[in-house]
Image (cartoon, rainbow, N blue to C red; front, side, top):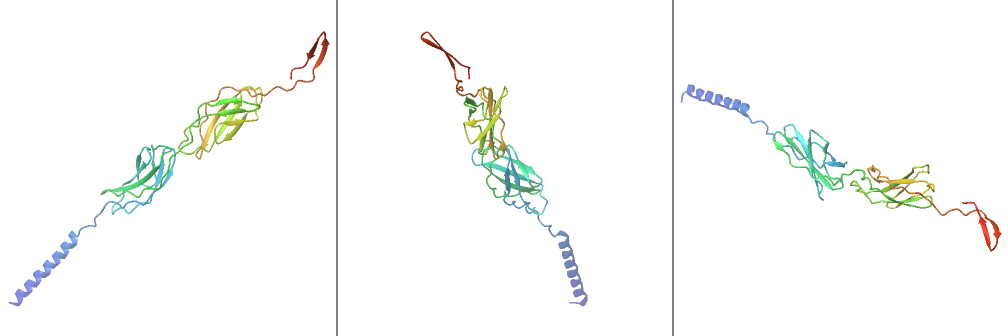
Length: 244
């Protein structure tokens, strides 16, 4: 084998190796993107027919997250719902007050949806109670007893009821609070005409007032008359007095 032949083969090997290295640099595969990781367990805050869902963004899979989806479902018959957003928090509306919910979150990028986060703790949407129906009233001595039927509690237990009685003709107003029906409203003016209404209260605040009751007039037995005067006559006595 000549020296020139050996040199030629070595040169061709060097050229091929260089070309292979260059080609390798040029065609090396780019890092592969993937769907995002699942978000961690979200935190939830209940409102009126809605839940606010907060979460920490997960690893985006190598390409930016386009949006998040929060989904809330009920374990006892409430309407399920969801909503999307570009970041945390997401408010999910259209839920059923008084029903129990958990919520989860998924992240979406150009490659698709992540797995769902773990479910949140349970939460119950709620609002103030409904207005009670028209109450009934019974008069007493300087007071009115107000009876009513409990309304829907708005999804949160009712903590108290307030009965308010107002006079149509100058009587002193009054109100009282109790945990159930009936409520006795005292300090009213005997002989004056009143109507009464009721509101229910829960952790969210006071609900609207009921329609006013029918009219009631507090009263008591009459005072004793003052000493009468007497006028005797044939087999009779005429008794004269001033009305009390």
